[in-house]
Every structure is written in structure tokens, then in C-alpha cells.
Amino acid sequence: MEVITAKAVDPEVARARQRFGIIGSSAALMQAIERAIRVAPIDLSVLVTGESGSGKEFFPKIIHAYSHRKHAKYIAVNCGAIPEGTIDSELFGHEKGSFTGAVASRKGYFEEADGGTIFLDEVAELPLTTQARLLRVLESGEYMRVGSSEVRKTNIRVVAATNVDMQRAVEEGRFREDLFYRLSTVAISVPPLRDRGSDIKLLARKFAADFAEKYHTPELSLTDDALRLLSTYRWPGNVRQLKNIVEQVALFEAANSPVDSSVLSRYMPSGASITTPAIAGTRIHNYQEEREILFNMIFRLQRRLDEMTSEVNALRRNQPTTEAVTVRHDNPIMAASDHILPHFTTPADNYPALDDATPVEAEEIEPSDDGTSAIAEEPRTLEDTERITISEALERNGGRRKATAKELNISERTLYRKIREYGLE
Image 1 (cartoon, rainbow, N blue to C red):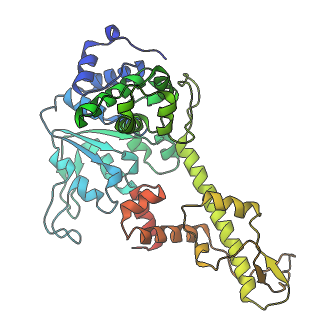
Image 2: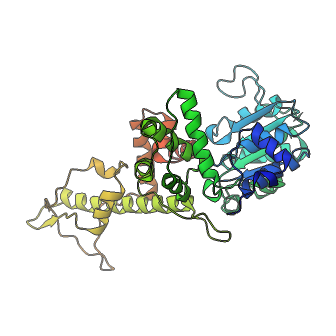
């Protein structure tokens, strides 16, 4: 991978890198910083894209600091952390009595930051109704508080960021196409850590030195083979993940420095994928797509497991005969579900336990007209399974939605939507 040396770096880019504590000199990173500096003086909307943990939050700060708005307010808003029911109020404000709990009028972020810059992180999480309001602000500077018919004006610059494939979100109807093009007047792509070459070693040394200085511990030293191990790992969590691992090693192994690759590997994720830096034109693995495929497979297995359990229980509840049905765990679907669903509570948990060779009384089932056997009980649908899974997760977490969303590995906004959809308030 090409690396820009210190002599080749533009002086303004070098100053920005030093001012904001950005470590590294890879070509892609330097180009992203230079792009942010060049667009800063011009009031255009900017969309910063990149994987989670890659450092997208630095670029709105650079844009604000190098713009004529630098003396006005800068407000950063995490759109994914605000419940859908209150996000319009947070962004645009509300009038007294506009909804339950609105005991006084309140300014929104767009009013508070008038004349300055607002950074909308995780902008792809905005609900469609809020997207329409945001589009109006970008086009005309006009907005209305929740519960008010008075049109207000704001002079604000919007910088947005996301780790979502926005083109795909537009195609799936999750994000307005007109808003996407309005936000992405200028696009800045932040490179993932695995594409930054020797920056990985620089960052590891910086995190180790910072940890030692902050907690007054011996400074961690890594051998060449340990640094090579860091350089060849894919880092799906990017800079955030690297910092986490370096700090763990510094805490437990600094006294035994230098640390080699055999010791370091114990702190790397189990089954860590090792790779060489990505080559231009090669396909980058899509972890979001892989996660969706796994979830779909899990829910299909859950549904099949429910169907099989329903069939067995239907047989048990009806007329007994001397004939028995033996439930065996050598069934490939049942066996697979034993391994894939260790952390999911399914409706099957409420059924009587079935041992490997438990005889279950059954009845003779009359064939239907098409030659198949009629089942007395309809199997649960995928929606039923999802509703029960969410309901039980909420119960396990005492109704705490943030903890529930983390357990289910979904965003809080998705969880709020599912709770309303299934009437689980």
C-alpha cells in the first residue's frame, strides 16, 4: 500500500492532523483530510462514509474548524441513539403541551446551532418522517417545532456520517433518494484500518504510550512478529478495536515486555481472520450482509424447530395409541439448532423437555385430500417467533431497551419500531 512520507504531506494537512490528534500517514487518510479542508470554507453539505470505528467523527470537526462558522456552535447528534418518537422534538424543538411531558417550549438542535455546524452521526437511522423535515431544512432553511404551525428559519451547515451502504438503503426504501443526493453534495470516504498499512503499528505504539502515561504503568513493547500480527489482522472494529486490544495487553503484559506474537494472539479475537492489506479493485467482505444472512438462518431454524415441536405436542395431546414417536437429536435441523441458538430463548423453551429417546404417544392422523397429513395446530409464524424473542429479551433485561437492543444485536431504533409493531409497550 502506498504511504505518503512526511515530506509529501501538504503543510495544512499536517497541521490539521496534529491539531486533531490524527495518527497515520496513509495515502487514503491524507486524501480524506485534504478533502475535508478544501470543502470547509464552502457551505456545502458533506456526507462522511466509512466503517464503524474508523474515525469518521474527526472530519466534521475539521470541516467546522476550517470554515467561516468556526466561532459559532458545533453540535454532534447521534441519530441512532434517540428514540423515533422524540427525535423530531430533539432536532427541531417543540411547543408547550405538544405531547405528554412537554411542560415547556424547547429549542431543538437546529435552532441552538443557528449560524454554526450540526453533525448528524448515523444519519441512515433517521425515520422517513424526520428525513422529510431534514430535506426541507437543507433546501430552504425552514422548519417547524413539533406542535407549532409557525415556520422558523435557521442558517446551519449539515455534515452527516454513516457506516451504512446508502445506495442500498435507498434501493430498499429505507432512505429518501432526494435526501441522499442533497446530503452527499460532497462525499468523504474514511479508509478502514486494514487499508492503512503501517498506520496500524503507529497507532498501536501511540495507544500503548498513552495507556502507560495515563495509568502510570510500564510502557508496553511489542516485538516485530507481534507488530506483523497486528498488521495482517482484518480489524472489523477498526481503530476502536485496535485500541481496546492494545490496552488489554498493556494492562496484563507490559511488565513482561517485549510481547511477542504468541502472547499477543491470546488477546486477539478467537478465530481471528488474518489477511494481507486489501488491493485496489478487490471485493471487501460485507460483514453486515453476512450478519443478516446468519440472522435469517437462525430465524428459519427457530421456525422449523417450533413446527416440529408443535407437531410432537399435537400428537401428545390427541388420542393415545400404543404407537410411539421417538424424538431424536440426530435430526440435522435439531442438531444444528443446538449449536446455532445458544443465546436465543425460543417458544420451545416452554414445552416439556424431550430426552434423546423419550417415547411420545401419538395418534393416527388421517391423510388430507392431497395425501399429506393434517396437523392439528398451526405452526408459529416468523413474526410470532420474533415477537416472542423480543418480549422475552425485554423481560430478561427488566424492560431496559438499550440492554435489550445490545443483547439482540440490533439498533435501539429498530427495537423501538418492533416494540410498537408487536404491541409490546
